Image (cartoon, rainbow, N blue to C red; front, side, top):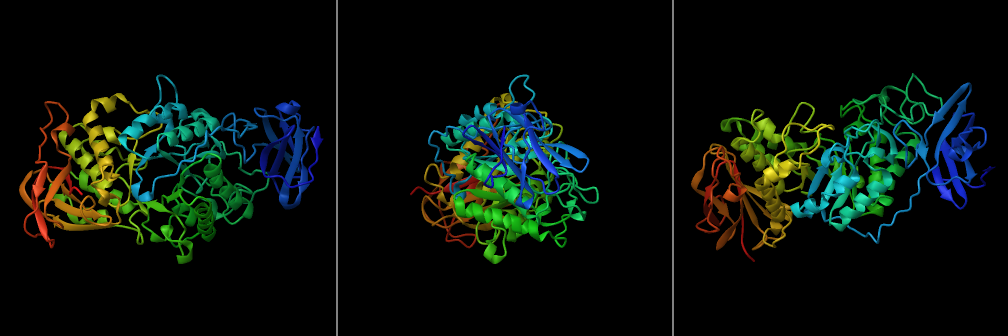
Length: 601
């Protein structure tokens, strides 16, 4: 039985007493009906009524959670079986929609993301992060089994690669077939909500990658949705001219069409509201704001869409973060809208990852530029050091012809001393430089090779490389000032006060308010030679304590092929002025290592 509505219903499907409402936007349709488990998939029994704006809607009594369904659209002689664009659940990317019950017991979840100056992100691909046994793909439940480990490691946010329903079961996720459904192979909506709830119990926020620069292109139920299109393009949800083309398919959403803008806006708000996400990371915003990656070939409505979504996130959820992957070093991304910006909180920083990777991957010391390292450390967007996310590994940087840093350093032996030392040197620089640091899954135990969606993490490696795991854990402890003596690593202020390009040594100071327990000195030796009696400046007199020496024996593998580590004194006493600072320290600098010092309060 169909009851024709008297009010305008939200698009999609909503449960009501005794049934459900169905509403869809199909402006070129001549008729629309819904067929499902509730009517034996008879597309004649439940027609939808046309209302203003190209919307169609009805009430179906007896429809219930778990029922499968589909819309049937007629346009002239065309009979089109279509998904619900707002479907929260599907049998699979090419399957039917499922009436979704949004109920979930969050058990009082009121988690708040860490302040951005105290945020450390761990990028995760659910399908490979903790795949068990012979299972074809990892799930949210499997990933949640490692939350206690991540908490122990010290990260306080995970960034999930896209988890909206995509074609097939194996994918990076950047091919969303239905942006509102959660990937069924990962565990669907309930699995994702449970993962977020459990992450929050471990003090870990969850940031989700979203893909708004293109959709699909395969298993794309929105394509020519109501039978209309121009130039053989995608129809009502997409540009139907040259603006449709992207590097991933001819499927750029039409940011200028109000209904499409609302669709993407609603998607962003769904993740934050219904799934308690703590932030969003937009995939490649360059292709939202430009046609072909050329800064001059702009899409103004793509820019204004990002402004609108981000403005509303800030208004509704001021503690949640929105991150852009743009990689064109454009400070307008993170400026407020009133200054012409797009209202993003932060952005992935190409001006850090590329020079820092080059500095540790380059085989010959003479070719390493300490000037490039200095610029990478100090680069910032606008006035806030935390408007950038800094890293040496991400899913993009360890695939597409590139590999994990140890394998880039020594493809034939990524466990070699050189790969060990220089990969951890790069990681230490990311965790001590100003910015929001990010690790990619397995980086903390020197994952080798390159990333792909079929090769799961081998967690035996974490045990085999427990020394480097401990190094990353100790770095994270200092980065978050867990011992109260390195507050400077959470501060805005930074100065490179020592640069020796000949010997490949650089030193910088970080501080928040300044003084003991705050100001932190980081000295990095990018050379193969140990430097004894090496002088660097420092701001204060008295005793400076070594908080971390990445060459300490406890961080070195117990293997005959590896060189022994260097034990440093626990503390140094400041001497006369140097490097333009009123005091100095005479240090031993082990090769390819970082030494971090601060003073007790």
